[in-house]
Length: 319
Ligand code: SAM
Image (cartoon, rainbow, N blue to C red):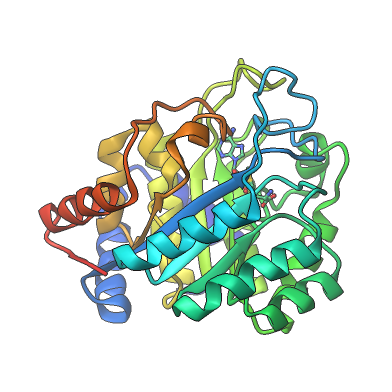
């Protein structure tokens, strides 16, 4: 299939998606096998200087209790995750100036001897900062483009531009990172054309991973009264991402699980092959409130056991 904006838009709109799901599932099996990769997610600071209108971490949200972990605790938690069997740690935060490039570089250097791959997800930074973190040992970087429509992007990010975001993604790719991109489904103002452009942008940037999740309204933001994105449309976008990027790693996103736990399970038969498991310390994890969600306390080891069991119940192999 020659995927263009028009063919993607009309495919997304078709009433019965069964055959696309089947194609995506076959391709996932061919390229990725039956394994589902589990990645540890450590949210280390919810301070953020940005004003993204959909996000609970945005600088203007005075209702959020802010936290930042000490670098020693970040390293300690990552090493505990390594001992539990994780091979990848994703270190995510808002854009928090307290964490200078040097501090993050030192954290990466302290984790690397464990043998874990380190993914950073700390927002937009100059190319030389990304280069420095790569030299410190960072392997991957997660930075979603959020929406491929430049006007919508500007409405949702009064302090940012789509071209800068995409330029960061291209810099990361050039520097040799494995890159993770992605977008939200159901953002206020988004159309099927936008979703088609989102999918094409993933391919243009050459994402190695793509996180596609529904928009979930956060009542503490100016978009709090808008409806959430659709779980079905999210699964359709994941299936098409598999067809466009056959070798990419596609997570079943946390947001999809918050919206509809069953959809998070079923997306593994629509092209997805990765899942992230929070290892953020219980005392702070409820404050990383991008959108409202119900979080249960769990320790790193039992959280991993539980997700492995869920994966086995799906007939797949946890890795
Ligand atoms: N600061 C980093 C960045 O800009 O990439 C990482 C943190 S950011 C909170 C992580 C992701 O949360 C964003 O890429 C966005 O897609 C997602 N997100 C934020 N608000 C959301 C919402 N209301 N619904 C769904 N996803 C949301």
